[in-house]
Image (cartoon, rainbow, N blue to C red; front, side, top):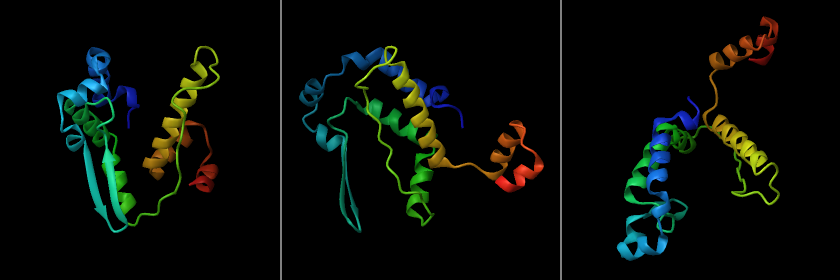
Length: 152
């Protein structure tokens, strides 16, 4: 799968944000749509109780929400969710990262590098890799056939 920044759905979202992002104001969004909570939230009933998904307090519009859904679909989130609830053995973990660093190094460059690495690792864990993909990478790295057999 291509890097997130090369994903056409992500690029649409970036373009929209460049053109309209600075115009978003949460107070105005609620004033313009008195039913905003109902439009941007969903309650799921599960065997373990109710789950509330509330996006009403985020700076999103209907157009942005559609783009976010398309981005999630293009990145395989639906398939990962299906695997999670189908009995596929999953690795339980939480991935947490601060939005803003408390100790910026080189004008925040270090934080950006850590964030990129964090996102790549999270995606790799979510999607996994086929044996053939791993074999190609290891061969490209110069691993011997014996090493390949041990590793795969």
